[in-house]
Image (cartoon, rainbow, N blue to C red):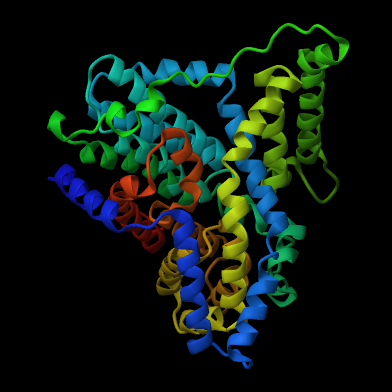
Length: 465
């Protein structure tokens, strides 16, 4: 029954869903209309256009951080050790249902570690499982495998690379997104990760989705082999081996420098030591545990750079992997300015402030659930956890402080709402779509069903815990 429902919903989305770039343009137009008609722009269309133009460049630094997280995750996932591990895992499932469940659980588990790593590992595993099952003559629905590979984006914001929790875990991060009044009202130097990512609430909610998501995907698997669309029907070119050619033996000193492991490992050691010094730096007022709770995006990227260099074993190999990974950043580079412009119009027009007025009328559980729902809606217009938090963060924390709700819980409510609607907003699926050769409209019908199940789980967790 669930498999039939998923198939029908997927068919509907295939006929109606636009591609990610088209969606970004349509959302820009829709936001402009809403800002002009419902907002408080004194200058009308001209003011909206000026705001949009200026806002296009507001998130360039953050966009670079996102590109680095994605590219370093992609490079690590494409290394020979990780590829071998993926190929070994891909040979394990013997039935379509187990294949889909395996892809989903690996994508979710790695997505909790790092969203870029989870996205690329999920994509590569979906690709390899599709190839492996095809070689063994087992018909598995390839678009569903690709959808399972995208599942890490449904849990990432509650994981170790979650933008909002990591941003407010440092004083500098808070100062960049929150007003001085809000920071003073919080009464802390920062909001520690023990109140957000490492809290019991997040352990239960995110841990539960590690089980829930694969189960839902398994239930969505077609029971009749004739209903499945295997990889050779969806993306026949994916049957080819995509492993990079091994580097030739160096013939000159420059080539030796590029291909020796010693320089790569030396740089990796420098990256890892730099990250380690951040963790180990202590004084009379701060312990190691405090530093661990204040890990930011830059520290996570340092670790990913170091691990990627070690796994590839040479500067040339890692450079080639990063060049390949950079292709997956094309959608971020092209669309991020559009979403930054949308965010600027939403803020300057007062639409976000109007929404915040509704939050001020709620308290306790109602406020937490409203933050959860509003984050999901805004994510359609600003599909970036960090970028979205710069728009919503101060407003939701002000409302929470007035209502007596713990800041850490509101940060998690925001994070859960933001991450779940990634299952409908295909912006971050661009690298996965490039690897699996699937279209966004072929996977969002299935992820929409998963969204409903996860939203119910998160809402229950936020209301009860």
